[in-house]
Every structure is written in C-alpha cells, then in structure tokens.
Image 1 (cartoon, rainbow, N blue to C red):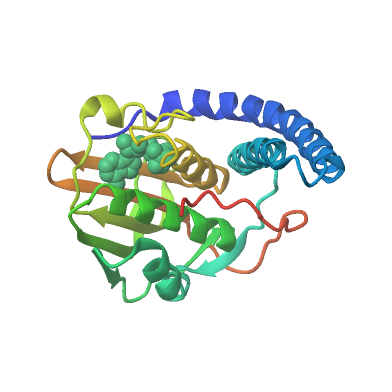
Image 2: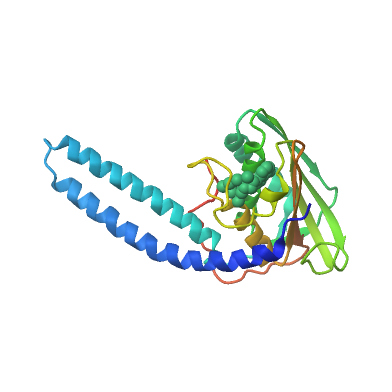
Length: 259
Ligand code: ADP
C-alpha cells in the first residue's frame, strides 16, 4: 500500500518550521549548559548532593541538545552535496557499519543489480538514510529476521510512481521480514515525531528525514507493508553522471541513527 505522499509534503513544511524552533532552542540549551558548568565549578566539594542534581540537569540539557541537532538535520538547514554516487559500492562499503549497528539477530542480504548506474545524491546523507531504514527494519524484527538491500536500474513511466517524474532512476530497496505496519500506521509514517516505539527508542524523525532527502534529490519513495509479513521501502534516486556539488558540504555531526 502506498503511503500518502502529499500529506508528507505538508509535513515537510512543518518540519522546516520545527527546524527554526530547534535552532533557537539549541541556543537556549547551550546557555543553560554553560551556566550549569560554571555553577558546578563553584559548588564546594561537600555539596555532593547538589553536584549530582546539577549533573543530572546538565545531562538532560545535553540530551535535549542532541535531539534539537537531529531536528536540524531533519529539517535540512544544510545544503545537499549532490554527486554521481555508485550506489552498489556505497552499500558494500556499509558492511561494518551495519554489522556494528544492527547486532547479531538480523541477517543482511544484498541483491545488487548487475549494472546499476550512478545516482545523483549526497553520499553521506544516503548512507544515513539507509542506516535509518535498516534500524527500522531491525526494530520490526525483535525475534530476528532478514534485511535485504537491493538495487536496480529502472525506467519510470509517467504516473507509475506517485509524485515521481518519468525518467531513469536507481532504485534502492530495503526489505524486512518483520511485523509490517497496519494501514493506520503506514498513513502516518512521514509525520515528524510519529513513532510507535517506546520513549527513548524512537524519535519519529527517521522516515521524514529519508523522505526529505529523496525529494530534495529529485527522487521519490514508496513503502509497501503487510502486517505480520514485512515491509519494503523503495528509494528512487535520479540516475546521473558527472559531478555536481551544490554549495558547501556541511559536516553532519547529528546522525539520525539511534544507537
Ligand atoms: P522511529 O523509528 O524513530 O519511530 P521513523 O520515522 O523512522 O521513526 O518511523 C516511524 C514509525 O514507522 C515507527 O515508529 C514504526 O511504527 C513505523 N516503521 C518504520 N519502519 C518500519 C518497518 N520497517 N517495519 C515496521 N514498522 C516500521
């Protein structure tokens, strides 16, 4: 079943607004952290209880700051550095990262198309997006299962994929054998902060971020999900050649991946 993409566009606008708030909020948290650190230094050694309270407050502020940085990354205040990326190579290069992040309960299979061309996308952001999708897949398979990463060159006809222009794309798919999603959940997955995960585990920013990335790259995204069978996320990345770098490349210090 196709997720509702137009709704997602509205949510993207909301995300941009949230990004502005996150920016200001992060400045406030920085001020709070700075003051707490100064105060902590002035508290005498005999005030262990007070120190502990201040440490707790500082830790909460740090967590808040990490969350706002994720929000900023999601709302994409940073320009993308679009390049012609050899997607198969990028996926092969993620082996260690995936093994470390996903743990031992899931098996990762690759079904890489024999000759997928290059896709015009920001390679660092694509890696982050795939990592997020794999983490979602793992979380949907608490008892273990298989994640299949596949690639293919595809030609998309007019209106074959919602909101996607006809043309050549590299399709990257992440499939899992997990819980799948009900239609109600699927309809909401692009809403910022929508999560069914317990507090501290999910931020609800993973799929909106992935969706934002592919749309900004001129591509599209579809999700098929069947309860109790699994989920397939397909990214359509515009096929391209040569190197185009738009604006400066920002280091992304705020990966959306959850540990
Ligand atoms: P988060 O992972 O932080 O919850 P996301 O935006 O990545 O945020 O995902 C939103 C929700 O979509 C998840 O909480 C989950 O309910 C659902 N979801 C995403 N990916 C999958 C998947 N592969 N299988 C089942 N449900 C999924």
